[in-house]
Amino acid sequence: MSRLVYVLNGPNLNLLGKRQPAIYGYETLADVEADCRRAAGELKLEIEFHQSNAEHQIIDWIHEARERAGGIVINPAAFTHTSVAILDALNACEFPIIEVHISNVHRRESFRHHSYVSLVASGVIAGFGTQGYTLAIQRIARLIDEDQR
Image 1 (cartoon, rainbow, N blue to C red):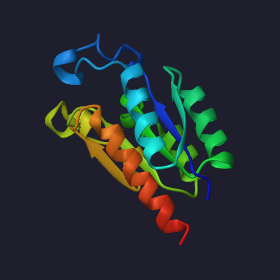
Image 2: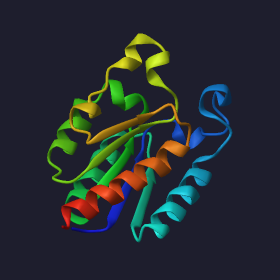
Image 3: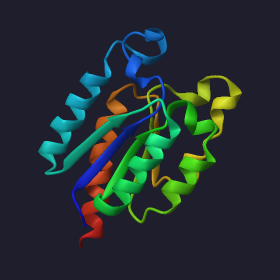
């Protein structure tokens, strides 16, 4: 199995550090990427890191990952609660998928409590701030290692 992991970020995550820092913190998406690359390097993983505000672009990256990667870490942001299309794309993947949310979505508005992505995710990490990405990278590495045994 490939040791390449796609880290995909949905809408408005390009505004990390600027948008609602009381909820999402002051780290930027560049900080998150650096943390992911550092964690991946320690675990001998490669990373493809992407962010888009466009649903179709995220779906295209999922399709690409399906052919190349050993797993996906995804923070679908608002698409979490709305995108059957992203769910369908992820359903075509035969590797681990970890869903990440910076905030604890279960302490927020009720519409945020439902996730289409959770239906296919191997695990969900929510409420750990941007550290959730590092935890997701660690979990993906373990799942890839277990699959290679």
